[in-house]
Image (cartoon, rainbow, N blue to C red; front, side, top):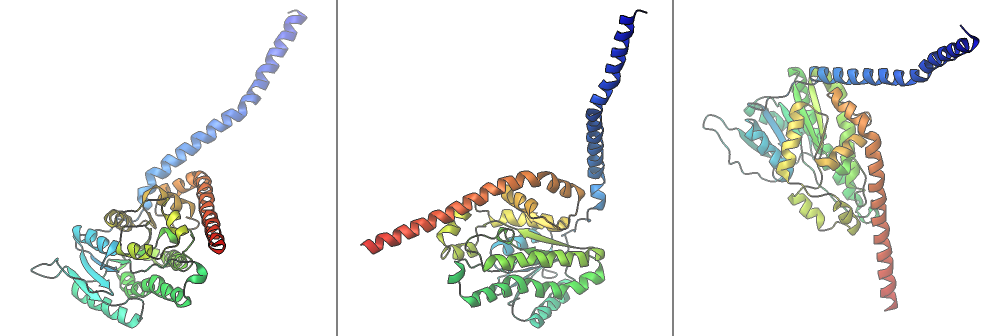
Length: 351
């Protein structure tokens, strides 16, 4: 072998050996990617095994507070369609037009769930004596007030916390002991998208809805060993008498921000939140905006399937980027309204 051939062979061997080192990072990436795909597929396959068993509404006893109108009434109707026995609890009188010859399937009770725990406990006991133990409680009693922070009367802050927060604490407290004894149950708290993000005009309303999530997360950790699952529903603006009343005094900034997303129908909201509660999902959102908000604000909230957790992890960065544009738009709306208001005042002074 000549010296040139030897040198050529040496160079070829050197390039072959070093080319493997160059390819090694790519090979490692392929191995890691394959491992991740296999891991995700495995989690997806075993996910149903760790999810709670769905609650059968046929023959179940469902208590709905705030059931005289709006979302609460539609939730009650949705559960009734699926064969549940319904107890409607509301401050206003509710007419009962569904009945059975053998026994009533709809019980209507008029009581303010935010005033006196003893009274709430009494009516829940009365409902259980007539229709059996409560299988699902839907806390939908609530009210909304919008206005600038300094313009909202101080006692209104207290009233909103009583209705929106304590109005959910009292009924839940009244049913939880029986649920624990039976080792089964569902509890739903109807919050709001304003309970996920604080917006202009909701300094009194948002905190009362944010509080429900803290209650729900703590309660879920206590109740999970007893096969009791908690759901927090975050409906968007919904076409209800409550929204119509709120719009009468809503600040311009709040109206413009609200208009960036549409208005849902209560029947649509009811179907989604009932489905999520029956399945034992912790978060219940409506529409693309709702899904994005739930993923963005999931934090340390419970998940009932590994698939849900993986979706939150994967979408977090993208949704945060989109959210920054939304926040910039909201700030722009507030600034424009302030400038217009100041210009209007200046024009009035000149006149």
